[in-house]
Image (tube, rainbow, N blue to C red):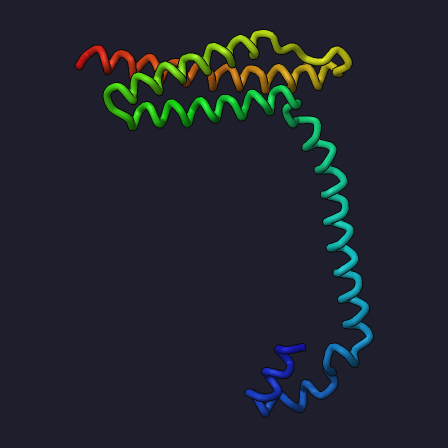
Length: 153
């Protein structure tokens, strides 16, 4: 018990009252409690891992959706580069972004949930698909604003 050692060294008047308290290694009660606490911590970690892993896999996007997420992120980077560019470079990046958006939109429209999915899995798939479509719409709006700003100049 580090605090007991500290008190023994700093408060000599309390030393007489602390003589019955021994260090951790000599105290079977302390060792027992320490073991019990460690067991409870390990059980809590194991339980949370067992509960958390299946839930994480249910809500995760499927492989096609992960690919779409990557494509949308690449498109977003292209759009950001176009926003930072000027003149002909900006126009070139905007054209590339529009082409990427058209390809991705076609693939998004063709995506369907797997036939073997449970109703809950289909709902989760649809929610993820909706989220991806909203990201696409957000990029389209940004692109539209950039084009409108270019016309006003």
